[in-house]
Image (cartoon, rainbow, N blue to C red; front, top):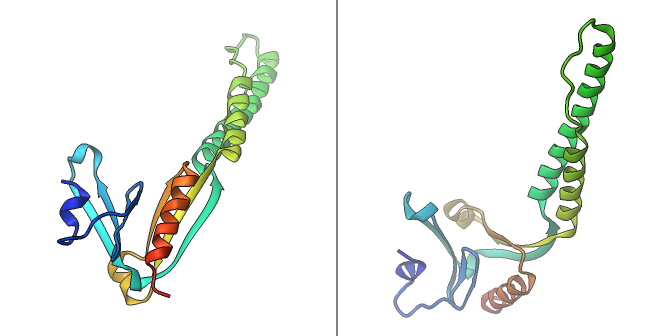
Length: 162
């Protein structure tokens, strides 16, 4: 199935950004599960229920989080390595030497810097009032393509009632 099967007769998609679709009368969020094995979900809202549309840039949170975790584990590895080295001097036998955690720390820092530098655009459409509970509160899409996100928002703003 595709989003076309959920359109009203004569309705056509005017803009798309990820899983968000804009028609002249409403906005739809259409999601298919992985390979369509677990079905699909469609949420929609007429433009009269849209409270606001926002477009913002943010860092790539996933890269920042993964990088911070790797750097933290690497720093913890240094503490463990120092403890094992100190313990090795006290014991009559030599405990196994641990590899240096430096590569883990460096990769973590590179990922954090890449996440801060690589900006993502977030389009959020907030649904107002009672319609918010029926329709899920808000629709959002995260993309690295800022020009497409901006064009999508311009189309949406053209359909919103004043």
